[in-house]
Image 1 (tube, one colour):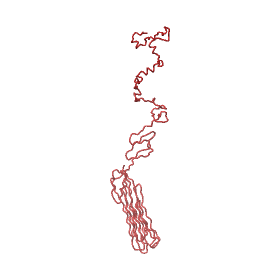
Image 2 (cartoon, rainbow, N blue to C red):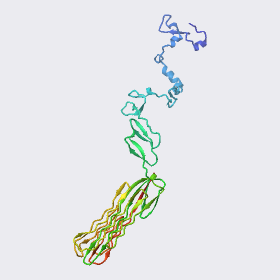
Image 3 (cartoon, helix red, strand yellow):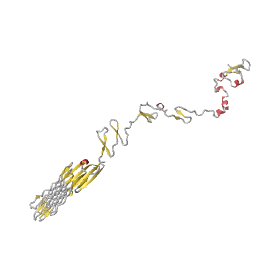
Image 4 (cartoon, rainbow, N blue to C red):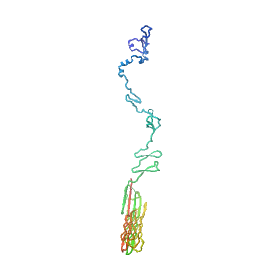
Length: 391
């Protein structure tokens, strides 16, 4: 062990220096105590605050401790949490182990909020990804989620069990419908953008028969038949750039005991046509009563169309007595777009004309007069063209 050899060593002794002390509790060497030596390291080691009787005084005398100026400021943290004041969690360091979760994850699951979970969140299966790629696409299903691409402008969505998704886009085909009505002969011109037409054709109405009167006798004539009718759909590709339109004229009523004139035939090109109604039969005077009136003309017929119809045959008249009453003429027949002239009950008068398009003229009645009377005229037919334009 080293002995203290200088004053400097006494002021700042080394750990292995021996210090000379007087142990007053030991009187071996005398009443003033016994001289002993102790190594510095043994003197310092094991001391606690309770071993130092004036510890509080020493702390109080240390101005640095009193003012707390000797403290170490906030340490600068590094690693996953950084900072010396407000701490920041570094990027890309929070992983599953840092989360408070009740269940282990499954690959491709996602975190979702769940107030019943201890950490307020849980793992959940992710929703299926969308197959949609384009504006207007529809989310559909066959055996799995599927994309139905948006259709083209003007198309509409319809159900189709043959399709895997049960749906498909189809052309409406129609954006506008134009109507052309021909009440006389003319020419139809095919417009650009036409998809197809629907044409209706009505023949002219037949004229009513006339009466030949005589004193003491009666006579009544038959009415004319209604014009025939046809309807046809014709694709644009089957049409010429123009088509001739013919409208049958109404038949004239006859004068005297003559048959009325038949109505004319109406047609649309060579595609379809409808004949006019036949004229009503005329009647000569007679004193035979009661008797049936003369026959009314049969209606015309349609041909070449998707729908072909016949005009109406009017009701027959009758004679019940040789008097100024009890005589009724035959009536005109109606058509799809017209009505027949009414049955005449007023004696010695002209028959009523047909009504609308293709109506047959009514018959007439004569009583106790030597004069001739005229049946009603049939009305002209009509052709109607509906143009269905592409969308």
